[in-house]
Image (cartoon, rainbow over all chains, first blue to last red; front, side, top):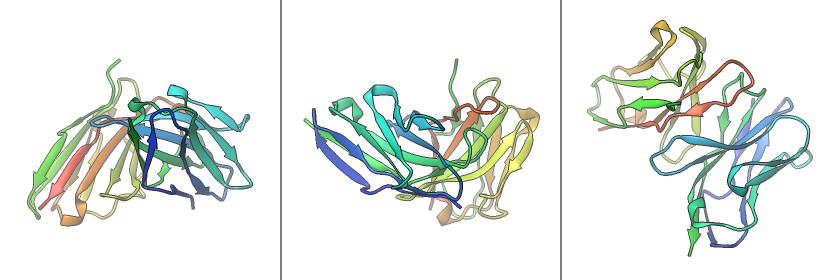
Length: 114
Length: 113
C-alpha cells in the first residue's frame, strides 16, 4: 500500500521568500511522484513529476522538487514566491506512471504575504 | 482543446435524495477516473474506466454509488440515496493511453444536508 504525508496544511511565506512544501511517501515499490496545484475554481494542474532518472525535477512556474529515496521525501521548492503562487498544493504517488490510480496527500494551502 | 468539464459545479441535496454528477473528458481520452475529497482530507480514488469498461472500482465506498460510461465518452456518477458523509468535492480526470498525465476537471462540490 502507498501513502503520502504532507506536513503543514497551511503555509505562509512572504513575497520573494523561499517556498518549501514538504512531502513524504510510503511505497512498497519504486514510486512515481507528482505535485499538483489547484487554483481557486480550477481543476488540479500537474506541476511536475518524478518517474525515473534525474532526482531533481523542474516543473512549471519555477517550481522544482527533489526525490530523496533515503529520506522517502519529495519536497517542493521555489526560490522566490510570487503572489500568483497562492493556491493549494497536493503531493501524490503512483506505483507506475500513468497507468494507476493516484494516492494523494491531504494538501497544503500556500498563502503569500505581500 | 477543451479541458475536462464537470457538471454541476455545486449541488445541495437532502439526505436520502439522489444526485447524478457528470464528467466530460478531453476528447480522445480513453481513461477516465473519479476521485473524491471529503473536507479537510486527502483526495481519494474512486474508480477508473478504460473506454466503457470499469478497470478498477476498488475505491467506491459502497453500493449507493453507481458509475457509468456508456459509449466510452462522458461518465456519470450517481449517488442513491445520498448520506451526510457523501458530502465533498468529486473530481474527474482523464488520460490518453498509457504513460501520460491525468488531466483534472474543476470538481463538483456536493453538499448533503
